[in-house]
Amino acid sequence: MARVALTFPHGLPGFEQERNFSLVEEASRAPLLTIESETTPDLRFHALPVTLLDPAYELQLSHEDLAALGIEQVSGGDQLLCLAILAAPENGPLSANLLAPVVINCTERLAVQAVRVDQRYSHCHRLGDSLPEPAPCS
Image (cartoon, rainbow, N blue to C red; front, side, top):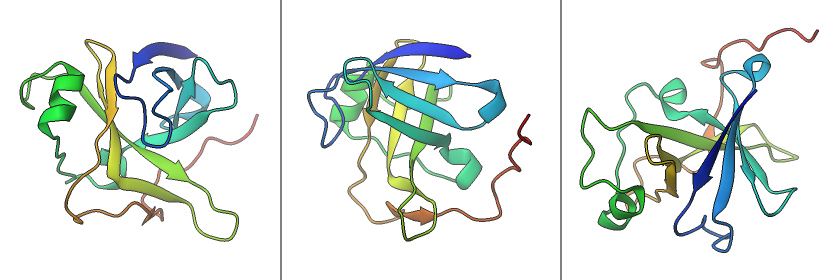
């Protein structure tokens, strides 16, 4: 299991006081990742790389997002990881938030939830057959 400490300089929308998280990757659950709060034990989010859900995804970052990530603009050399937070409603299909992805500067270990101002993507992108098959239980 790999665990990387992350700082969200502005917290997450709805959890602004939460600034310190860990990105957890377990080989048996790949490509699923978990974002866990360092201060609130039960606060965690499951996420997938947006490129698995939409290979043509176009990232949009505000000036505030860029500053929080410690970069001036998005360029090919940036070590950015873009994740969609998953939602599993009790009476609905599994979905991913492509409207407000979590963007991580892997070099600086800084992260933001980048809320888009347009409506190009949905906050409840329904997951379907495009996901890789999960590994069998052992």
